[in-house]
Length: 240
Length: 367
Image (cartoon, rainbow over all chains, first blue to last red; front, side, top):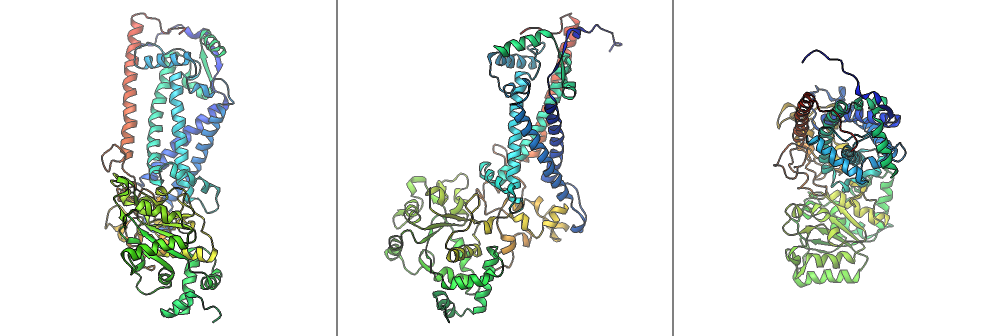
């Protein structure tokens, strides 16, 4: 690699757009933090790998891990549900129709983005918020999150103390095909979320690199830097 | 005696002392989670209670639930209540046979219509028009419709009757179903699952009915909450080892000999609801986990299909080899996604580098 060559910034015409509002960013990071904690504690609960010496009364390893898992699950559940609620309250980039292609333009964008990923297109179609393809993936991720919340509540219900309102969620047990199956689904869901996280980080970096719009930074600052044409084209489309 | 009811007479005839009867009432109060003073009230009420009329049907079963009752080492109060109440029909223990027996059943259904209790043991086959199980020329399905349909309540005893059990396990060649599924919309269906159902729980259920004149609150699978309201795991005597993080890693290892938690040996206590740790089996002698064997989850729906492999934490994943570890598959999947995108990244970088070299503009505008 040769020494860094100073190049003119072609993006200078770009305008700053507040894409991710504060609630979206807070929900995002709460979900990230809670998934990491839940996956780590959940993995231990499924495979307790720490060797604990006798006597039992001096230790509470599994107990502590479970408590962390349960409290983090509360954070996760509230963050996911708040974000879903925000789909009906937030700005245009947070809305529910970002996660399902409702217009022909979004369908076209979905196809074109896919072409970009399979190297048919050189650059992805310009977007301000989520691309149509990413949106569909996120809808799936929200689905997995809800399944994780549901299976988690189903497994928690019978161990909640007698009289606890959490016992009410026992109705979910037959819905998921019984507790053993709820447990299996819970394991599968964790790996799907982790596999998604790998893809998500890669794609954010990729988009940041090829669109030069600050995709990665946007989830901290809330801002993306887009060309005026992109913003104009999108406004037209949503007005139509 | 002020109350010379049927039960008092029967107890006397069988040489059961008053003391033993009161002890029985205390244990019933305990199983039903009622406070101790209720035991005396229970004794008073049971003595005066009317005999419930019971018919006991056996379909695709091994008579294991009946055996479980009959294996009492001495004539207990429970046995007397169960056997000496008007048990008008029970294939395994009745003296009558053939037309005489079938007549007794038909009479009960007619005479006590809407008043008797139907106990059902075994699943009901629906395949081949019900030909896999017939009694007296009628299919199990026909009998269940007739007898359970006219009963004041139906008690599905054992996992086969409650959830289909082993006959309904994949591939379920006879199309076996639970009583509740075979005859939908049954009035007062109560499932007393487990393989076999614990005799103490069935007795307690009948005592509840005799004394309270109603059926107890049920869980999401229509099982009485007094017996199925808690996970085995939550009442387990080895729970302290679970919470501490001390587990049996192999059969007969140091941890196993010290009675540590069987969680890693595939114990299904955390996903099974029953009062085994408290009531135990064989008159309170012991229970599976007490003798070092993991719970196999016999009281839960889809027992066998979902609780196997017995010595593994998770059930088999459909479409994968038996015993495949879902977490290994998941780790593989995550690694594969990582590898795929790493490759994607390399190609992407190469493409853009080449693109820049040939002087192509970066960014295609206005789709």
